[in-house]
Length: 517
Image: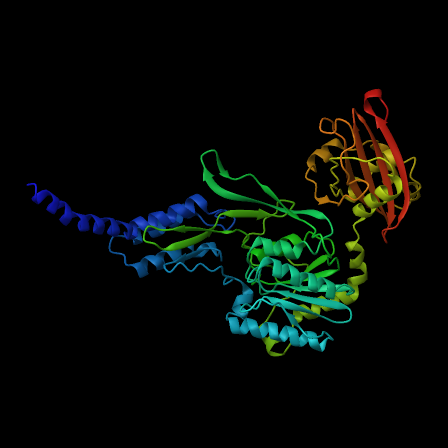
């Protein structure tokens, strides 16, 4: 027995290993694991109109111990097909590419070669319109785009967010910004954009805004006992420290604009000087969350949700365009780019008007306050921001009605403005509570950006804010609010014309503890 028992164990070991391997390859086990991973982590069943439990009831009976790998893979693909999600991939080889296969654009241009021809026609068409040589990004072996310009406009093509070191991408973007310094408008083409890394997207968008802006929210389905989703996190555009390209911009998109390309369109749509041209983006905003099935197959799914600042989701339908254009093979074969044609036509007609949208009146008002009105006082821990309130809340100007000549001048010109101000002599506190998320952050400059010099700065509520920005008639009204603590403060209304020049300012002080203000 002393000899036989080890021998039996040795003989049994290969059998145990074979049993475990067979169990990992069990079609039924793998189907259950596949379905369960989606059931716990996929974030868009409701958005995409799919009853996942119904899919289980329909397809689970088709899988048994005799199901071969090819059939099992085919069944799994049938289960996820109604999702029509380009971030959903099941791969025996581990290759998990995102796809735009459900878009109309990919039906017109299904192959890489046809998409390359589409872009060649774009560049040839631009040359006919007076654009110069196309400077390609140094991103070999990848073709990530490049830029060219005419006397009036710049054209920037971005085919993906990655493919080269981030610092190299940033450096080439800076070269592009310098080359476009004097153009009247920009065409930004992301119609064939396969997505990529958020850091590369940030490198681009940070050069297209002069202020910090709220552009959306995101959350992740993490299937924890106490919460199905993570808390919403805000998405912001942050201005780059160097040169920026703040120009009337036409963003060209299509159904082949996916993933980080979707986010690019979502973010830039929030800029007042950007218009979208072409077709809706693909509508796959989530990161690709990956997992491994027991048999070693890899899968990816969408476990994140993204919405715009108004909490609107474009998942599955894409970011909508302002100027619709359908891209067709027949136009490409005729050497026409209808999207570029429409974008150039729009810039020819609207560039001057759109240029006024590039003016950040909040920043100009704060600069005026810092440079002209604030000479000796210094503040630490200031929080400059704008809630970006809308013109319908003109009653918020009520405290300045008796002091502001510009405001008095429009009483007769703006219907019901005087009546509304007289009817509501104070700010609507409920409206303020509903707009606590600050949408636009201006940049603080000297003498505001200094070291702390106020006493007890960490224990009081002293801060500087831009409490609202309203447009009435041909004037912009920006209210700067200085909270000094202990119920005291000062409000400054800065009035600017459409060109961004300050035409008037007035002050109000308050001391709530003593009943003043």
